[in-house]
Length: 330
Image 1: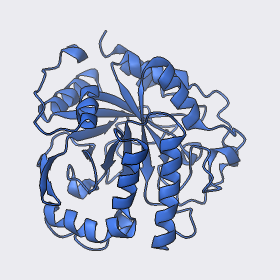
Image 2: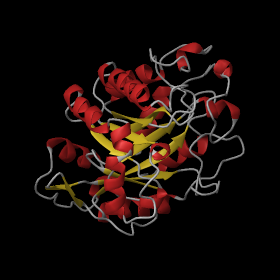
Image 3: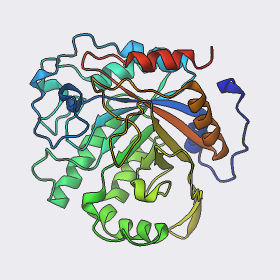
């Protein structure tokens, strides 16, 4: 099987130029590292001390070139997860990579490497933040999100994707309703509280072709939480409901899908299989044939496929991931 011989699917009418370009990428990597990496935990509450972060052997060049060798055309990097730790030089939180012994902006380093080798860069940003003291103050926290996203989209060149997650603590209603009703509930509650319409409008001013996604949790795989340009699905071996056309503000719009799978196969509970972060005792990985099946699944659903790669405390990809990705088409 050859990655570039995948059956071409004619895109639907009405796609934006950003959607067309993004759908052509087809295959990407997600690079996950943060304060959790250095404590060998999958999640934390914003209380972990980042003073142990040295990243003495950081090798972003390895990440980028391994992805390119695997036929990937873009990557999605974890800018900030639910713990609130920021992997860039943000002026709006003390809990960031510059206040560590490493003291360098990882997104800046990654952006330079991506630009050098032709890998497109996307970013993951959690709307949930356990560190920020005013998280419960909707007005102030919405401004916090706005300012951080403004940094991310104005300081690192072209960003092809902005993947939001972690909205659920701002959303108390709609969970027992249909997907369509849940979207409406989210718009009237969570999206309103976080001023997502205003944020989306400004994203399109800063970077008109940046694709916006919002993970709707494993309870609502593949539905859009507006305003977005595409839908997301995490660790799904099949898509039960793949509604691509959604009515938004009186207009039916097409939203392509991005499927994200973990290269780790270790069962850690509700969101199994796989760990997002590096763990010393996790060397599980899928066989190549499984990745080929994931690619075919994505192809059938006119979706992009992204594979999560955990980055070690030293700053390298897991060896098993690197070997696997380099062997895909050989």
